[in-house]
Length: 178
Image 1: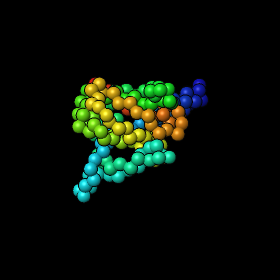
Image 2: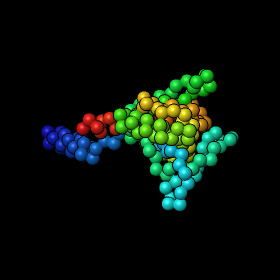
Image 3: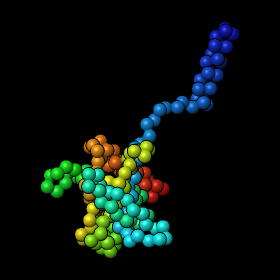
Image 4: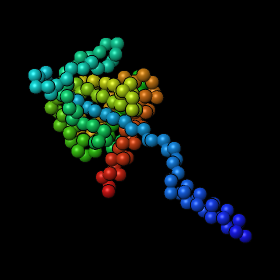
């Protein structure tokens, strides 16, 4: 009888040890994305501007932009893939929150006739991010939606960026509700 009690106590001790040490499940981290939108800017000696080369890669556009982005993924409510006008591939559409929409409207009105430089990142590696587009802003954007044709190597990159931006938007929404 004592042998059964010892086995039972040993079993309980091992179970308690397993519970206390915690079971580590291999949870795959959610993909996250980053989006930085910069305005075309006049070069200055104060270090607030930056010269970049933007897509398309076969005929790059050289722009001087503000070093700091005026919009980031922190202001995104949702992102999606849409058909480009004329059926030429896919484009990214980004819906901004109320603050982001107001900022987008102000910058698009103030910088009409200039470019926005758009940087995207869809992974942890530096190779998973680059300047994606430099659309010419021709009018004020009042609805808080910015769409652009990005310089993606594949639809996988496009999908990963959109998925990552939507994951960040969900995380931001949860943070605002707390």
